[in-house]
Length: 136
Length: 282
Image 1: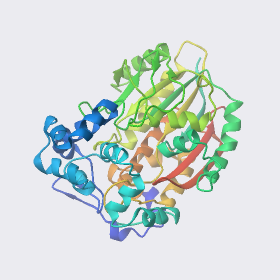
Image 2: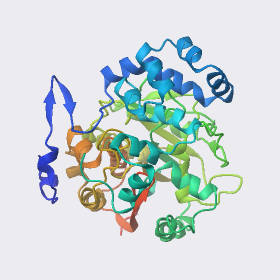
Image 3: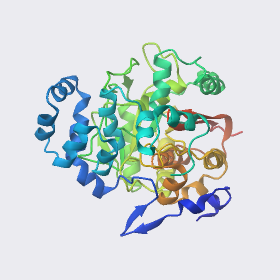
Image 4: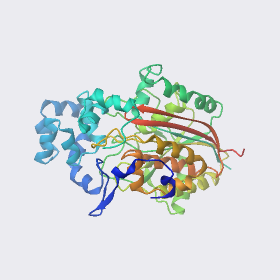
């Protein structure tokens, strides 16, 4: 811990971190590292394709076929079809890419925050307006 | 000789742009944020630079994950505004300054910062929202040409805070060695504390942000000493993008004068900060 941080009052003990197998581990915090990105490459490429309206339409017409076209693993396809947002992150999705699918569904980042934390969108938003969450 | 006229550090949350685009700046959820921008905007309107450098990150719009450059620079004549999935923002395309871009690139490579070159680049909210924070009503054109500098803050390992600060210092030297006698505004974008995914989503750390807002002016070297792990733990997995403020700060003089700063939360899921510094000798 550097001096600049010890000057800040924190309740930090419950957020102690350590290296696990050479990978960064911060509780409750997905780290989008190289291994995660390798795992999620096909999924993220598909999500990136939603930048084009034509692709968004083709996906909506037959979601499973569109996933197959991009070579997603079966569990990634299932997570997409089920809108299992947590699984998409666990299977290598980057939040910025996963959010493109959420936007197509008319879902907000606060909705996703609620899903990740077991709250409704309104509860999650209320916590943010109250100053944000301090801990996982 | 060229030099930096001012530095503007600001969050680039997409909803800040959306609130402006949809006329919601007087909405109770947003008013305090935009009121907080007003003094900076007034000062900036009186201090228009010849060219601006925007240090930012793309969010799956101009770049995908096929190639993840740690640092990049645009060298184009212009940069179209990206369609992020719901149509492009209705703001002007960004005009470039390729001559300055190429000068900065050569100077930085000579100093050991091997930036990736973007001859074509669509720019997303990471770049256009800071321009809107500066200039809410640009009309047909932004106030001046822009040189984009890109930083990978999305995929670990992000560059270290120390490397970003050193890049900023080299960028300052590169600006001051430019043969044209131009004034430069530099924008460091992103932050402040926030985390979008995981069971810690919604994490915000006002104590850390207050410390950062103070030390970015008075002691940036201390911030440059923070590790990647410390930044992710204390500022959140997306809050680490604050490292881009250090590139801005590094390009400025050791002593800078604060014009204005403001802190607001939440802008969507994020603590939003603005800090404007005058780089001219006091």
